[in-house]
Image (cartoon, rainbow, N blue to C red; front, side, top):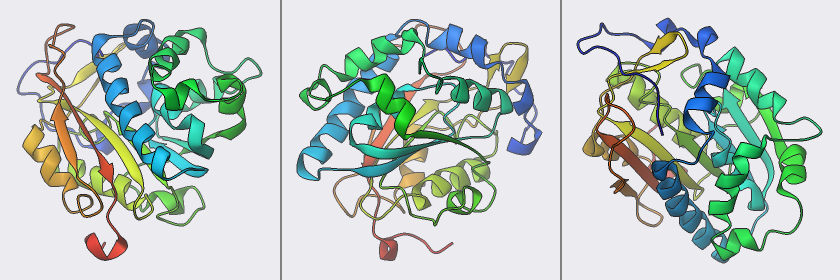
Length: 276
């Protein structure tokens, strides 16, 4: 996945509130990243589909899902589609919100997303999905505006915290700020939004220097595999293993980051996560 032209090193610190979110060019982002399936995304999807597929073989749905910081990326929602009676796409950028809502029209999502669904369907759990995924997407997806760092996610969309029984977060906590404190708060906000035992999947840029989308530059927090592990350990690992892995796919699309990290498992019980 190409997140744009990297910024110069030693850029000043930029907090989430200072980033130019109204200028995020959703169409440019999709054209650069999701017009064609990239090798990194194919590897991520294969790991995610196996994780969710294994869970739901043993724990049939239906459930409610959330993709936190959905941006202009639909494949996390597609990965949750077979088991969800409702999926919330939670997003801050006004242009991303408009893009997501545009994917819920009568024709539903654009044809470029079919190649991502095809990779999911290499697993029998997805291949056995009955019905039209576009129709199901249109029926179960809702788009909600909010900021991952403002109060809890449940309050922002008029729901109780811990409502969502599965969740995803792709390139969000480390791609919205240069602050490690805000990175940690973002991860915690995502995990607290999930119900006890909920399966989750998250992806992170490793050692990102920031990224350009259209004419705007956006901040990133420089995180490693061990920092991702540390941020998630208070919230996962008690109900099944917490897995944090660096992708095997080589970095070959641009400079400005050293790799990609995925993390997945199940959210701990309320008694086994830190108090707010």
